[in-house]
Image (cartoon, rainbow over all chains, first blue to last red; front, side, top):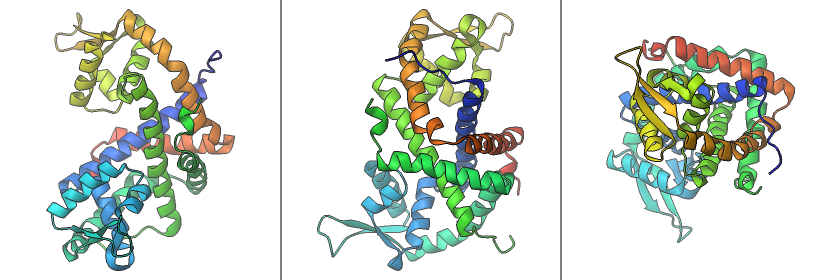
Length: 158
Length: 158
């Protein structure tokens, strides 16, 4: 490896603020959802399913949408199933597929929890950003996410 | 609670991209450091200690700097101690204090791992952002982090 190009002060600050905001916002979101007996992943599962026709989504699609591992998602959906908020059913159209399906109890739970979650997202994140920052963060972090989604292992190639 | 102000499409995209970039960058960083036998928190501990005189820092200051819980940090520093990379010693100047101190082996390990880590941070994050995005993300996410640092529990007040 060539002599490393260390981060300068500005780059270090950018990286540090990205990590800090991520960790602190995660903590705030987790703290709130914990009082509702949900993890952040579990909450996101309810949200995604609620937006689908019939409240159903294939487990593999759900894992991809939430950027989580298949095994991690299986665990979280198992918890939701234990709580009666989601059911797992075989996909009629694909012998390999398993669907997660939102139950009525799951939909009710989401309606109860979502208003406070959204208010928290506004308070700790959206409201803190001005319009220019909002646009730049959306564009910049989209590019970051796209690069890692298109070539998820590219970072380990070199 | 008043009728919730749901997120519009633009706000939802901003929030989604923030979560996605955070999850994907975390995963890339974790994957690399795992091949080196370190967690991201463990790596950050080595970095912070290496920047201090004598390679020493109080555990409480370290936890605050890394936005991690005291118990989480204690576990991670325990792992570093087992690996011989850090020692824990009582603080002479404060009977309640415990310092984490970088060992020579820890400093050597950091010198081995840091070049690849920094190259990864450039590749998956810094290089993807243009100068305007860099400035806006630094400013915006600083504001987000500061708000949650000044009033860490404010989000749960209402």
